[in-house]
Amino acid sequence: MPVASDPADLDSDGAGDHDGQLPINELFHSLQGEGRLAGVPTVFVRTSGCNLRCWFCDSYHTSWEPTGDWYGVDELLAAIGEYDADHVVLTGGEPLIHDASGDLLAALDDRGYHTTVETNGTIAPDAPIDLASVSPKLATSTPTAARDPKGSGEWADRHEERRLDLSTLADIVERYDSQLKFVVTGPEDMAEIESLVERLRAATETTIPDHRVLLMPEGQTREQLDETRRVVAELAMEHGYRYTPRLHVDLWNDAPGT
Ligand code: SF4
Image (cartoon, rainbow, N blue to C red; front, side):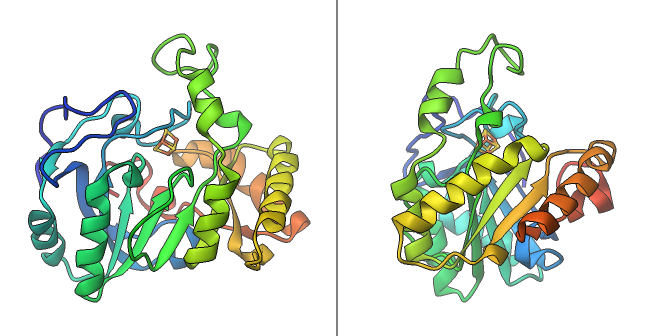
């Protein structure tokens, strides 16, 4: 699937309405690299646009500089059907900022696909989803002036106001099979993760077992993961949470389309 011009009619939050179409940054076949379905052959549909701006975003061209082109649901179903895979991951950016993501998920559900949605957990879905893979953003994600990859911290306040919404997180874990996936930069993140998990448990009657809380090392290259994976694995053992690899980085480093 070609990647074309900037979807110029996205607003500053990355959302847009284009006659029921979705702004697509890329669509590709690979192995699921993260979480409890790691290793499963999967078609990835990556939408462009995000309502947050994590400084370490590993899909820069869906958030800081969104690029892609518009595709209708039928075109996407045809492209997905070209691959021998019954699992589809809808990811971004933040795919749930687009109303048409719900149309695509409903159409995939009708056709018997297993769907995973990779979301930052700030927007309540309105669609059939088999696995909500929720990645709440920690304080260390905020693009302060010193860490801003593009400007001088202009997004920091907006990001900080939006990055956590406990009632939306509770709504998602109540309505969907889910996993909570935290990008961990080091031991300094653990107090915030533990606090958030406890607050979320208090906000819902749904049980959130420790094995549904995933710690994932921060790093977009093998070299970066070499610095973090052992530390994060030991933190998972210490706290009783689940470690998740970044299998696609281990296998293909930072090659695009993996
Ligand atoms: S929420 Fe995800 S896609 Fe959006 S800026 Fe953060 S890491 Fe990137």
